[in-house]
Image (cartoon, rainbow, N blue to C red; front, top):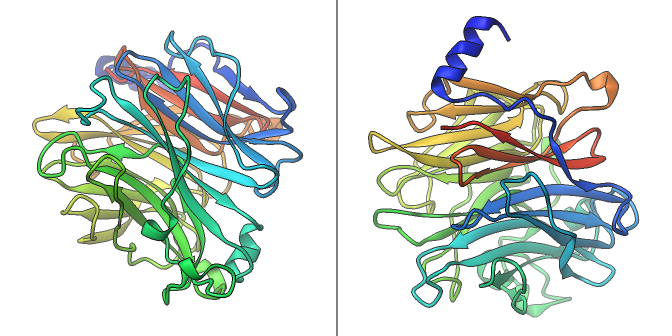
Length: 385
């Protein structure tokens, strides 16, 4: 980074802090061989909740996997002992998608929703119709100390076809694989859809296709604090996959998705004018290079009635590495600020992969990300004043 660029970033108040990242989860500790799939949210009092998949026996995507949580009350400098929040026996619980509901009058201090998926087979087998992925949520009204009983919302937000094994899931759409986000969900803060909780997701439909064109991104939402859910439209881009979303002005929503086909190493963007229910515009964004990996997008405030967006991903077209945060002041039309977070040498095994963003109490960005060849999930601040 040259001196002039550093001065510009300092003047804008956007530069990664120089201290080393803080390890939140480390493989081989707390009874888990591996930790993956970070998700983070901040509470109104500044408390941070960092979720992950705790993989008991190995680093693979399927098996005995729990959802685990650590919290911080000092902007991520230190973290609590590990808490298990979902244990689906010897099967898989994954894809944590947390969000804080701040508009429910029954919970004036806010209530945390944690959406997640369970599965009974490997993703490749589920794509073949041999297995089922379900969708659930739990809630907490005490900052994550205790959690409600799980609520199964599969029939409202998924369209699997399994009449022989479960007649309740007999849909002609024949969705098979299914996953939330990964990363945080969102709640609309203003306008016509204020209070809406929206969860970005993806699914596969029908038999596996070449270049993963059976995959597509979608979303689901609730307008009544979790009493009922509605399935949003599928993004009309075959191969769109893992995604997160952010609130824009005038009731609009931006979905930012991974391109599983990989023919274009760019992020896929969808724009909705009706709070995420349907899609008006979709495009590949050449400003956001991607190696076919997960990314995180977050509304971090408003400027001149437009959403200020932060986006984080492994900004490399060849490998999962070079974690970068970008800032947009015009709701994603341009990304003029680029902040290297972990531009490491892959030969040293320090490469980065999945990440998630949260806005901290001090108005800096917090980023929770996979580091050192998936051996750690770490936290770091990025100054976003």
